[in-house]
Image (cartoon, rainbow, N blue to C red; front, side, top):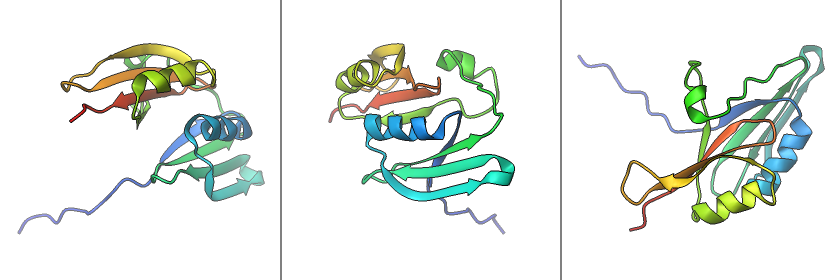
Length: 143
């Protein structure tokens, strides 16, 4: 008798942040994540959370905990030195425009400029949000 597979689909990703209010505003401005799916405050634990989403179904949870310390990485290769999630990858329709807007208007730090990806026609770039979290921007191959 075989083992039954678990039917699963992606629900959300969670980022630990130092300033919940600032990160909520930044991701709202940069990516349009504004719909609040849930908000929770646990004062005794020093924790505040919010889950933001967009019309396309992207959901990101931000968790602020009093006394937390940053573990931001300067580049995607350094991030792999620790066995954990290393970055948030987001598909964008126009990589050059997204990279320019994020590193210009939104003050994201450029990490790796747009470059060809492994799959023919795919391109990627990396930026860091205001707290240093790595974001990979992916432009899919055009059909």
